[in-house]
Image 1 (cartoon, helix red, strand yellow):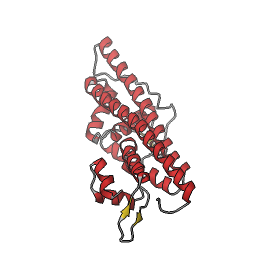
Image 2 (cartoon, one colour; image 1 turned 90 degrees about the horizontal axis):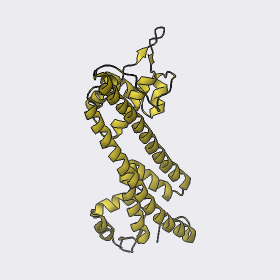
Image 3 (tube, helix red, strand yellow; image 1 turned 45 degrees about the vertical axis):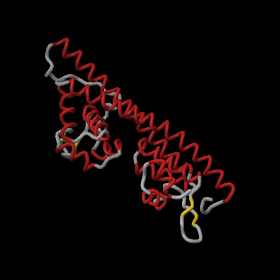
Image 4 (cartoon, helix red, strand yellow; image 1 turned 60 degrees about the vertical axis):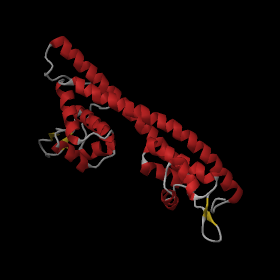
Length: 254
């Protein structure tokens, strides 16, 4: 196959295919005596796998998976995949916890006739112990500076230790941070996240909040389905990959 043959199947440019080879997303091609690349079904399967991984895990992570495979680091590739599934599960659990809170808010509003009053929100993702800024940052996989930025945006409102003046994140703060992290990955801007967090704190505007959560659930469903599709393509490519490695050992694919 020529670069144009691989590109045509996916509506790509031939330069994109060459770039994917350069970046290690597909195996290195052999060359003719005149310097032209020669691609095979192995390369076609690799390209299908990479492009299927992108909507499931993101461009950067998809590239890490493919490069790990081509470096014969199968366990590393599987670890990255496992982390993606773990994150998806955590997102689902956080979303369910927030949805429970929204249902609780709506019940409180209907029963008490006071939609603006503060209520105690439940969250399975937040424990009873307090966390420092560093501990919360590690829990979420973000930097302390990110948490301080969320605080400046009105998303977080941690208390201060009276002796040290350090930030103290309680269960409700952790819940708000988990919600902010969830929505941030969903592409929501900080000002909208701040509004959502304020709504869930005060039980006001739950229709808007419910809409945001419904949208995020659809995104999680789409991502889960993309992971299933990616697993199919990756498994198919891995069969080619291992066959070639067994037959030839390290080196260019033929």
